[in-house]
Image (cartoon, rainbow, N blue to C red; front, side, top):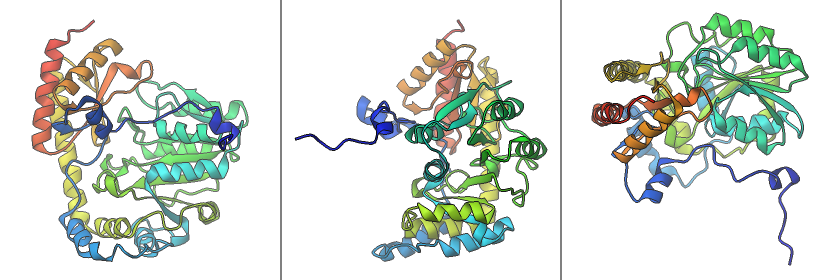
Length: 368
């Protein structure tokens, strides 16, 4: 009997996983991590109010969540100062990116992104059979002028920009982003990924009212709000483009606990402000450690720090040394960026272990 075959696009794809999770690595090695600082989660955790709210609602998980995510969208509407019909909620930015690619990409469509930028976006583009054009970074930042030029070189369906950026942690100010948005051809959809917006300096994010028919902006509760495990994020833009998500989204995809947790987290501004301060302090500590170890830490507007090891070979060796010490960290994998390792920040216990391992690795692995 001939088994069912996948679509032609899927059949031609290699078996790809954008990120190997820490649990997978632990199973492969048989060795648990002592510090989990490689996935850019918030090691500080969610607000105590969120934890209490989840516990209180746990008995209600026999019911589906609101298919319209109404209360969360209503709260986000007040938070952003935009209409509720300008907002959609989804299963993390990863899930929303997948929906966006399904909505707008067909096989052979041209998509522009940065070489080394968030690989999960590329993963979803590949699933649609679209063609990726990758623009190199310039001075460890996504090159806005080059991205615009690439969209103008040939008809382009989508361009992706993360600001602040993952994996380098660098950023552009709001004025530069607005100039970029205005310069992209109107027939090209702009995906503006602002996952790390809460941890960025004031003046990084354009006002939420920056909207135009070819722009969709994405934010998440996974970072500063500490809800990575709940998988809840949102996209916002002109209602006519946001409404398209309703045609294909999983209407019960964001579970009841996630909706309620995000609602409570959004309301606890004091906790978010406190976490942002802790993230900044931990970044400063990592930067100082890197400097003492003879390394260069890149400026960061995120909850992680990219540390320049001088070469890809040394970065590989230092990554291996830290993993061997039980410290889960990651590194960019494309040329130029791959001279760095990337360390998320977290609680003092985990940071202490990471700082000790980083210092020891820098001493043991000499510059090449």
